Each structure stands twice: as C-alpha cells, then as structure tokens.
Amino acid sequence: MELAQLRYFCSVAKCQNMSKASSELYVTQPTLSQSVKRLESELGCSLFDRYGKSIVLNRQGKIVLHYADQVLGLLSEMEKELADLSADSATAVSISINTSSKLLTRILPAFRRIHPNIRFYVEQNDSSLPDKDDYDICINCAQEPPLVDNTKTILRERVLLAIPQGHPLAGLEEIPMAALELESFIQVAGKDLAHQLRRCCETAGFEPIIAFNCDYPSVAVDFVEMGLGLTLFPEISWASAMAPNLVLRPIQDVFPTRYISVSWRKNTYLSANARLFLDFFIDYMQAHYPQYALD
Image (tube, rainbow, N blue to C red):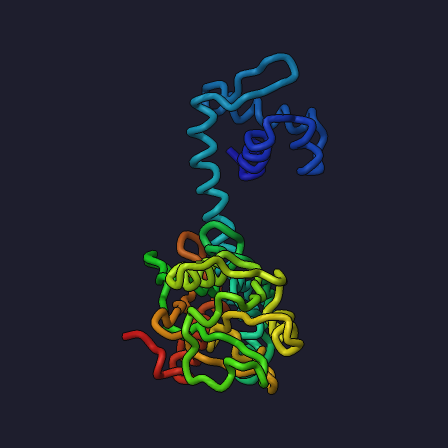
C-alpha cells in the first residue's frame, strides 16, 4: 500500500466523483481508477458501491477513510515538526480574532522585536475555533468564558458606553439605562455585542434604536464622534480605537463585561512559532492589564 493510493482514495471518497477528484489531483481518470482498484485488491474488499458513473462510499470504504485520514494527518504533523527542528523560522503563524484586530497592534510589534523573522496571517472572524477552522491560534471575546480544555481565559474586561464629548450624558459618572431609551445606537457586526446591547436595554424595558450597523469598531467610533449615536465599547479589546472626542462611561446597574480568551490547536501539531506567540500573548495581556486578570 502506498501513500499516493491513500491520497487518491481520500479524494475520490470525499468527491464521490472520479472526474472531479482527478481534476483536483491533476491526474488522469484512468490513473485514479486503477489506483483505487489496486487498493481494493490489496485490502480484499470493495470500497465503493458503483451505480453507472456514480460511486458511493460503502461501509468498508468509510472504515478505510477514517484510518486513511488519520495516517495522512499524522504524516502532515510529522512534516511540520521536522520543519520546526530544521529551525524554519519563516513558518507563519495563523491567527483568527473575533474582536477588533487592533487588539494586536501593540502586541505583534512587541513580539516581533524579539522574534523578527516570524510572519503572521491574521483574519477577523465573528467566532472561530482552531479545531474547527484552519488556524493555529484563535482570540475570542464572549460574555461567558469558553469551557474547553485547549483554551485559556485571560481577562475579564468591562463593556462601557461610548458617548461623544458635549452629549448631555457625558457629564454623568455612570449612565442609567432608563436615560438611553430614546438614544440611537451604532451596532457593530458580531453576535456578542449585539446580544449585550439587547440584554442591557431589556433590563430597562425597551428595545434599542439601531441607527447604523457597521463592520469595524473604528467606523463605530467615527459615527459616535459625528453624533450619529452611541455604542458599546469593550475597554481592552477596543482600546486602540479610542478617539480624543469620545467619553467612556459605565452603564449603571447592569455593568456588562466580556471574557478575553485564547485557543490553540488541540488535535494537530502546533508549531514552535505558534507556541512562542501563544505564551507571549498570555503573558503580555496579564502583565499590561493585571487588574482584569483571572486567577
């Protein structure tokens, strides 16, 4: 049995179409078909039920696919670990972040001063997990700390109300929810803050007036400065988006908070570069925000 046979079989099993699989693998259909037949001959069983030009993975095929995925996955992990031993410092670290990507604008430069050759691929997502998505590290902010073992909850941040300077409410130390019933809000894309806003308003018995929806915290801050509405402002994860004409105030009685956590690959190999950044990120956040650190 050869590794190429397993790769070909996995592709056919997932496509369930010889033509599509041969196109993805850049091999001819006869080559692919013969490889699958040789594998079936070696294993002594048929792996597909064939209906004319259609093929469907059968029970034996599903068993072989389960183990073939593991074999090929372990081979990939072996290659990554060997690359680490070869001191391949150019290996990029992939990061998914589900809050403002500006959270990293101070952390990444500080890290690269120590490790200047490590590259990063950063993508902003509503929510993500390294076991579900193809990332080394995921940075998440949510109302509740995630209860999974490949995650560390680092900080609990306050969610404040962002108000433009000169607004009648800007002079208050705390903002009562009842005073916000007729105010317009800027809502930022993402389930977490939208849910927080709705929950806060429900405690005072009203529905929030959403004047604008936007994709980025920096846009929400611009809209607030322009007097187009108010917005919820996570104190730490949005800190880099703070503007001089903005006032931040806690919301009386409800005092919303969020948990900042970091997750990492659990079932696949985590590169040395990713482990370096993971440890640095945790230490940096706890050192710079000790008053919000969790025990």
